[in-house]
Image (cartoon, rainbow, N blue to C red; front, side, top):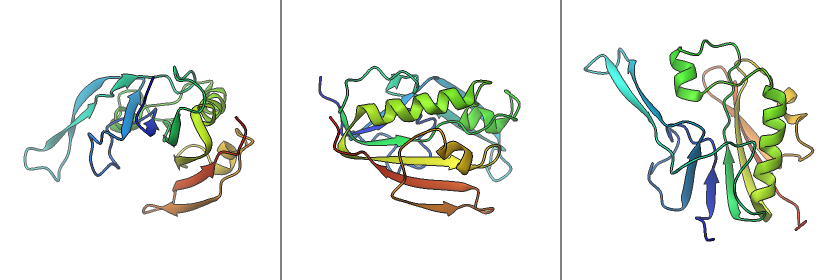
Length: 165
């Protein structure tokens, strides 16, 4: 089967994409839902949040063959302490009690479906868990990365898969 060159298995509301319907990306997520969130900056006092993936996917068990994608964007939920009904949990999703097992499996699956010498872009926010703890969950090493955001808690890390087939 032929897929677009890019996989985002936890795309959520596609918030960092310039084109939220970019045909080069297969947008996946474990949920399909929409919310009306309070927003003081909006004229109506609220804004709509849509999580509408191309495919329902569990990033711990991706239904794709090995070496299927040139680029994988791995932006899993990063919250463990936020209430299930809070707007942050609605926007980003929430990790369960087995979060370290899930993230370990997610890294493994993302690298499995990545072509040799393919690129994995990993995004993480240290709201609840330090990026140093997350990096212990994969044997892969990032090539480079960047901190950003008001409090420098968000990290963008770039990995490259090795030549193994």
